[in-house]
Amino acid sequence: MEKKRLTIVIPVYNAEAHVERMDGYLAAQTCRDFEAIFVDDASQDATLSRLERLLSEKRYSARVLKRPHGGVSAARNAGMDAAAGEWIAFADVDDALAPDYVETLLAWSPREAALFRHTRVVGATPRFEAGAGRREETTGRALLEEFLRNPTAMGVYDLVIRREFLEKSGVRFPEGYAYYEDYDFLLRLFAACGRMQRGDAARYCYCASPNSAMNSFNIERIRCLQLFDNTHSLYLENAGDFRKRFEKWFAARLFWSALWQASVAMSPKQALSFARENHARQRMRRLTDYPDRRVSLSAGVYLIWPRMYVMIARRMGRRRTLLTRKNEK
Image (cartoon, rainbow, N blue to C red; front, side, top):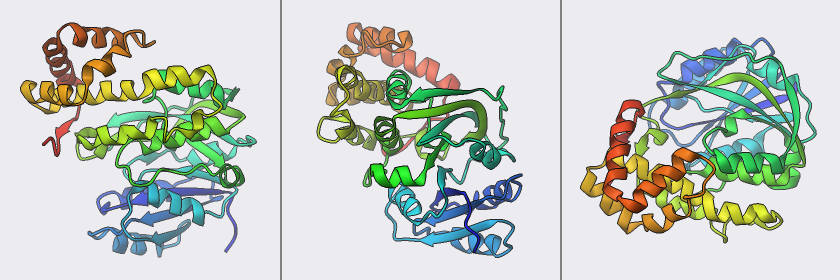
């Protein structure tokens, strides 16, 4: 089989409703110099049989990697290990790719990695942005600072990474965590990178769904915050003054989001109980000087009047969120 320059790693689990659409996006690529690795994480539905039927048509280079159920991080790591391309990119099976997605990624040749943009839509109708074709040099350290101030602005699906660099750096996804595993990967990657490139094109579209893990509230999120404590955050060893800001703000900022979501998904009484049980006052106190004024001001509101914070979050959140209740007990 001809070796392709780019490997796209796509984890799938009970995704029978999405595989045909992703197959269509891959078949429509203007550049064929890629292989797709679908990593089936022991799906219990018809995902595997549908994938095998679609890929038997051989409209592009693709294979299915079957593995025991281990979660999305284990699936991505397995896909990275199996990748043959010079470059590696990640996609989620329920998202969308522009026809020139591969072409855009392969037009660049950064030493280690490049970062692009993505769009976000609600539902299945994707939207893309071509950008002005701007390309700029940056550093992993600069992206660490940017990520600290807005962790939701970047995703692993914005990256194209040289496979050789990934192997040498040892950067992998943390296994055993249902949430924030992608944040941990980004932090480790940025810390390991020297110079990076970034572009203004958005050829990947995140398609939000009420059934996705990120749109359902689960208190398991709180346990997963341990990814960013001193024990786990080994990428902070040589981070200098960044380390102090990271330890003060990052996990607290993620908890701020979790409390906002809890306020929408739970009753006010339950949300306030959740806040007390998880030391919200201590966490919110860290955010009173956070660079995002929306976060710092609302953290101040919580410290003065927790119930007001919950009511504001419920009122504003219900206008804009797809959040549903899940395992709130």
